[in-house]
Image 1 (cartoon, rainbow, N blue to C red):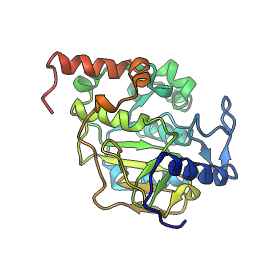
Image 2: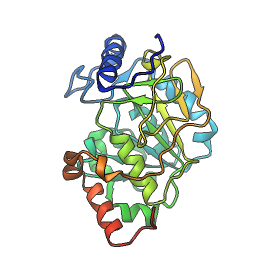
Image 3: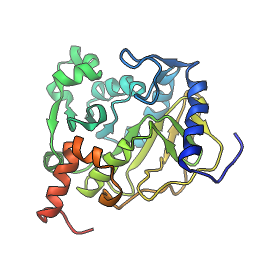
Image 4: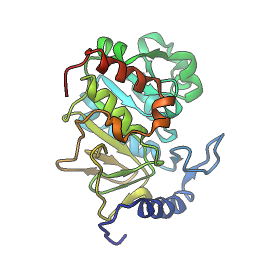
Length: 259
């Protein structure tokens, strides 16, 4: 695609519309949302090949605890993580019921495939607060997400809601990730853009992009260290995402180091 310096809301919408038109040719419909890509991150033809590329990379092979978003394209990867003995931190849809932990030590082997699904997670994972995460998972080795679109410099366009950036901000603020933590995107080739895009202060840029045919390593990606920028946070997100409320209470109580 032709380069453009613009990342206005209108331009972002145009980018999503173009990518979503291409994605529909390779995407697997969601059982609830069909092909409404504004509501979910789709699985796609070749997602397992992209996951295998990721799993061969040192960012994965050296990991013990991974954060994997609840995106459809990452279901097989979540299963493989459990099979390989990794603990998986995940959020519920729209983070409305917070963070949950999938621990293979607590899940029978014959239930791990089911546990990797969103329905199965509800039965085999356990909810964890930010305080629990600080105590039980002092270090998360990598953050893995799907996305609506991403350029070759790692700048993501998801569904437009900012959930991954909020997840990064919360986990960074409580000290379990930092600028050295890999932010990884797994996408179809048609979701990778060549145009120039510019991240906001709170946007988490990917270090690594895996597609069914390519591995893209991004030099010096922008990793926000601002935590949650409360003045810029959508009030609806604050009202509907309990961990954001917990984080603010922790900050107000002085339970976290000053920024």
